[in-house]
Image 1 (cartoon, helix red, strand yellow):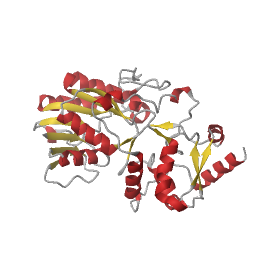
Image 2: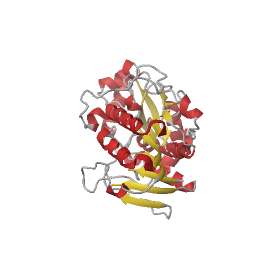
Image 3: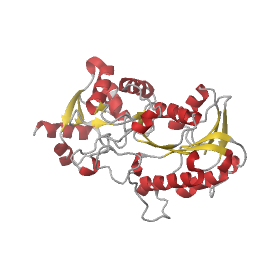
Image 4: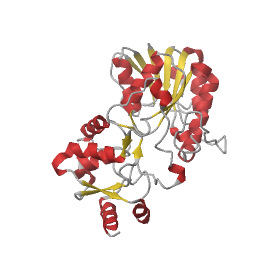
Length: 342
């Protein structure tokens, strides 16, 4: 099969191209050229911009046909619609990678694909940072309007693993397997309580492999894409990371939510994966229903493998912008002291 990948050679896109080539497919990538492209005989790199109003825009995609297009970089409805309109019948199936942030209400467990989505208050807005979820929902609508039953919408949760450009998962791997890179850390590590707090995440390699399978099977529909609800807890993640360091791994100290609030810790950013469980808006955030995706073949690799592979990738590959927003060593010490003084 011949695939088109719109954007992304850094993280998910890298893994998607690898998965497609490994299964014998040919791939055309379309990117701005800001990250290295795949050097492989089965990969044709094209350059341009998703926004038709910038530079050469979509000119490189004016000709060609593909069995499937994977849209990994669609954030603005106008831009997504331009790609859909240009490609039209030249693409048999259009797979749009959306996000679980489209859901308007995450206060209840078991959010399914038919749950209410957030809507743009101003349909003309293109402010992705302010309206990320609503813009993605509007992008979904454009894809479905253009492709109908030839559209596939996949809504990932937290994507993790090697080449993750964020610190959301890698912080915990580094804190327990390579704490020295975080700067002067103590032998105790602050971890948001309770240990049994559920987490949901998905290795980007597993998503990539499944996206290729969906294209091969010409599978349509809308899917939540993350690990099954209840499969893993925060304690499972910490134990997996601690085992890699073994004898000199930091000891986790579980910090209560009231202590985290008193210290002014920013949820999700300073302490990645932490959202206050006692706030109703977050009650269902890590309890999303993935039954539809699992029935369609989505498989999650063991958490220990994700942690191990991420640790191996992190070693010696520090980005200059890494660890800028996570808990600093000094903030962590103060947090540990607050917990001890309770």
